Length: 176
Image (cartoon, rainbow, N blue to C red):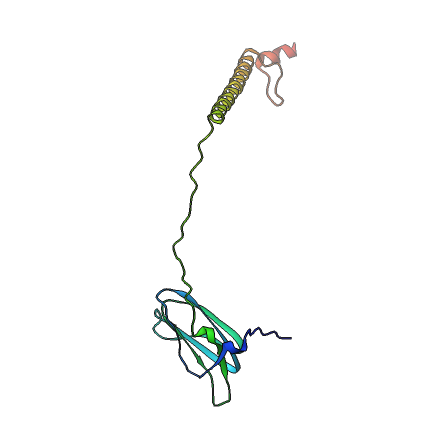
């Protein structure tokens, strides 16, 4: 089932093949044109920036053409009238309203709120506590490393490593 939303039938008016429908404007804007035809229709569009018209649609039945035009533009539907094809466009399309586009973007940035002095003082205390904890941990680690290195220097090796040869004195005492 197909659904066609036409709104008021009086809004639609017949158009002749190769008729130029002009949309005047000083700035870029959106152009919207609705078509109804009983055969294939080629829709050509042209604006101030283009040197020659461009094919923007080729359809039959009910269809819409929508594009952004730079300044004044025209739409030209082309179809075969001798074959009995008729085409209608929305009457509003001829009196297209200007849709001004504001290309400037403005942003409103909120100023940074002042910090509470109590919060700032608390943050400084927390930072000092963290630094003192890190320093204490570092000092403790350094003390343990120093104690281990002193202990290793003072203790002789008590166990022989497997695969090592015994010194000549140890060999002599074993033989006796």
